[in-house]
Amino acid sequence: MIDFNWKKLWSLKVEPRVKMFSWKLAWGKLPTSKHFAKYTGMEAESCYVCNEWEDEANHILFGCKYVEEYWRWAERKLGIQFKYKREWKDGGWMKEGEGYEENYARKLINFIAVSLWLIWKNRNKIKHKEKGWSVYGLYARALADVLDFESEEGDRFQKGRMRTEQEMIDETDMEDFRILWMQPRRKEM
Image 1: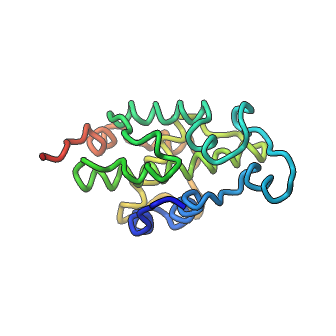
Image 2: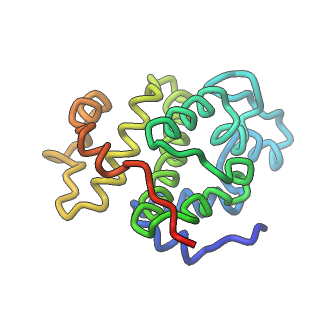
Image 3: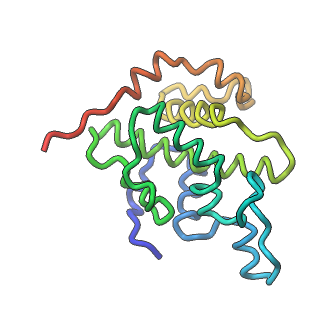
C-alpha cells in the first residue's frame, strides 16, 4: 500500500461516492477486468474506450488517449499545469494543491477527485453500450459537481432527476468559471 493522506481524502468536499471511489482507487480495488482476471484466471479485456490497452485502473484513469486528452483540456481551461501527474496512480493527485492558496487548492483537489470518478463512470457507460460523454461534457459535469456540492443550494438535482450533459453544458456559466478558476497565485515563500 502507498503512503496516502487518508484524512485529506475523507475531508474532501465531494459526494460520499466520490470519496469511496477514491478510497478503492488508492487500495487498488477498482473492479476492472484486469483486477477480476487475477481471481478468475481469465484473460483481461482491453480498454472499453480505446481498445488499445488492458482494462486496468492506471490506464483507464491516467493513460487512455481519451483521458490524456481530458487532462490536457483541463490544464488549459484551469490555466495550470499538473505537477505530480506521473505520481497520480500512486495517490500523487492529492498533492496537486500544494503551493496554492488554501481555497483554490481545496477546489483543485476536489475537481481532480470528481474528474477521476466521472472518468470511471464514463468508462462504465461505454462498457454497457451507452453513449459516453465528450471531453468538454465531462469537464463541464466535473466543474458543475464541484461547484454544486460546495454551494448551499446544491441544485444538481432538479425535480428529482439528474441534469443531462447538454443541460449542464448549457448552464455552465463560463464567466463565473473564469472568476472562480482564474490563474491561482502561488503562496509567498
